[in-house]
Figure 1 (tube, rainbow, N blue to C red):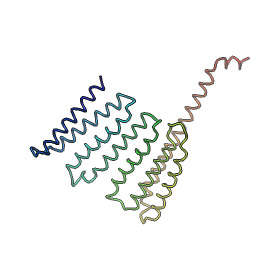
Figure 2: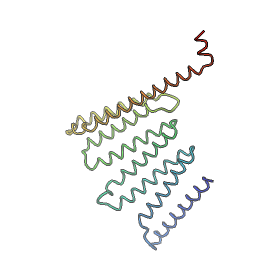
Figure 3: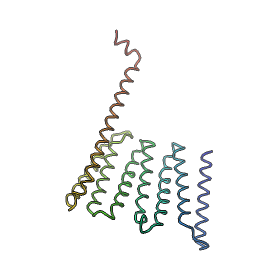
Figure 4: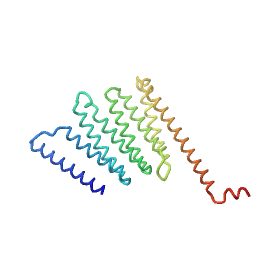
Length: 235
């Protein structure tokens, strides 16, 4: 029944979009941008409902994020001298969150970490492009890409260990350091880079500690649950 209503809502949205496009094509009236933004927002919310209501529908997070990002972009374009200068930032960031949601739903889809990290990195780079110098922007992109591949190696999920991800992570991190050292204002950039690196290192340490603790608890519970284990030991 839920699937039927979702299909009906999406069908209605497509019909409304087609009618609005026809109105604009015939020049009968101009459709306000807020109407288009509202239509995109409803469509995005519908896909997110599918994502949360139906566990196998992990893919719904991607179009849901794209539609909501497009809606935010259209609203920001109403202020071209202000927020309209950074319309790409929310689009990239929200789409990155959509891919992150795919991984959080099922950690077997670890590949979603890569587009999530890269899109979020691009959103930060786009935001910095108007105020920071070229070397700082380039180093930020390389550092974000390095963190992305480091996460690929660290996060759980998948049948095999992804040690190979440390190779591009190390190369990209080295490239970021080289770019910073060749820039005149690398001291200023390091003011922001090192705290972020320390925060990430702390998070990794906490994650390893929690994981090891859970493994020990699981091993203790498995050992105590073996039939006759305690009795044979007492004999």
